[in-house]
Length: 423
Image (cartoon, rainbow, N blue to C red):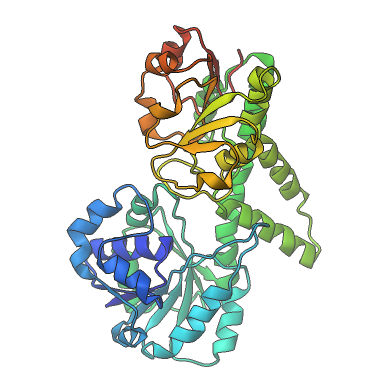
């Protein structure tokens, strides 16, 4: 039997994917109230395909708050999400406490894998604290994405494994689990694996920042980034899967955490990481794109406008609000009459002056001077622009991700602003 310890977003998705691959799974969390909710089918996450997969393979999942049951597992994953503070710094204390509490309950022959994202040096220090033990410990890089976690857990591109001795063979029970996913397995020293996760995110940040820089220039000179991106995808040095879609800065917490980690490591070791500060400035600038557009096109003449906001989550297909550009916009627009809707993310309207939350998208539009689509949920693209226009008072669409059909909008008396598109 395989165990997953820590049932937040990471543990819930990986434990389900493991069950779907045919393994019996013990899913442990020390919080009895959370375990009770999971047994009743009340899950604290929103992920496409999660509940459908659970209906098929849930019979292989056993949720428990009894650490004693971990003794019967020969492969154990620590999969607690690592939270970040307002400065995007990781708080590893809950993970360390969970390991310290749970490790004594594990079978001496079990292979143990840390899936939680940790700072370089964590695993080597952990092994030193635990002292000599027959239990082999490993670090595995996770690359789940909010809104696509089930797919990425089921169909990983590769597994990156950190080990105290990368030349030693992996335990057979761990190798059997890895083989079930039929993808390349890269084994390396602890420090290399810990930094590999950060490296992946920093290369992504560099693409995001470059894309946003050039998309803004497109708006200024009358070019259209949507016309340029296909040419870049055909360049083998960039490739068909490059992240070339402009966005409202970096959000979600994971990318920001890795930027802060690299900056801190560079300061400690005396290396150069000034590019990180440039990326953070670029992200902060991109995050305010919708606000700058609103101020220029509406608020300069109507500072108390009625504004409809579609989308609160930092991205589609998730309920997460971590570093959400939409929440920052709402917080900044105090004094306006704000009406918002999101299919999954929940906020307390009372926390934001002038905000009303509606049960559906169309209800936000009555008398609106502008519609701002901050999260590109698929359901928003199914609403005909003519129906949106009929419910509004004004004629301003701020649509950074081009959710609305540009040709359909062009037939209306509307001002349609899209990231990277000149007028």
